Length: 415
Image (cartoon, rainbow, N blue to C red; front, top):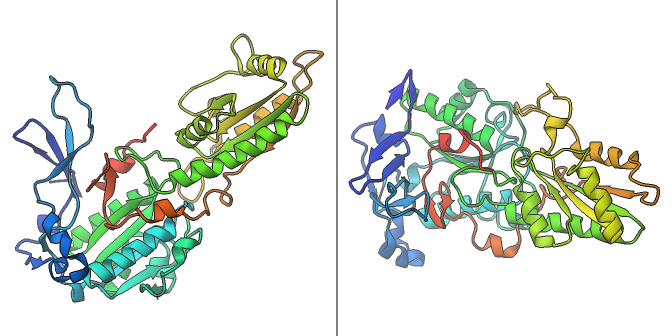
């Protein structure tokens, strides 16, 4: 369906009372496309797969738990290998691009896409777009082969490089068309997926046989619908190291306060999960829960109470917490995100000048492990590598892989 030239999400009502939120398909605008047998059927290394081809009508419920009298709710089309596909292996020319901030596991995702295309589907032409969206028209491509990506999962960051902004739809689609690319894999957060949606609309408008697959990336785990985004577990694990360091420092001095600021612009999942796993945190501040500083029940009163009782404390702050208490910043980064005020530094300074009592003179330590380097540039641990994205355009939902329309990802935020 289209509205003002923009394709809308396909909504299908199932006979059993559920609603299927479907994704756009090439056949929506290119009729009579031929299909081909899935090469997995003839691949001896994956002979068992043909016993488990996914039926086109299989779906995955958004919610596992429902009331017996409630509607069956929203379903998404289940992803997985089909018996019939719409590209022959020697026809495919794929490209991969990473955009936005860093996140643990980017190289792992790149590697698994390349390995899947090469070894499972016989695709031998895969390009890497360097430097984010602007790399489509401002940088050279690099060929990606299993040999090139063999050990990149052991490194942090992304071998393709990344950037914010640089999205010029016309130039990007011109580049895709000129290079003969027909499969585009875009790894990035909600802003990147908005860009992917616009790219798809232009591809559709031109009637090109090109598919766009978005792999949502957010270290904050704030993408709606999906259970967990890649890199989140690693971020929580690394955050605990910072919390442990703060705890050791705080309890080593009289009235010590360890203050740790973690990533979490709009959602406090990293801060909360790291707090629960650590068991050494006395106070966790997240964007979802407003707080105040002064007066009865305020943060300063709680700090005084904890110091009197225990002689030290650890506070974890998500970077987006308490922004309503600070003057609003009108500045934006290259991706259009509003620049946040440093709430951790603000509270840290408040503690330093705080005259709690004559007997409580806090000594404060401020740790920021989430500023691009310590957490964002990490590699995934082995346990996650071995279970990473093995189907390049699929999203994990309730432990089943599912197709999600990209607008489902950026229209709201998980909190």
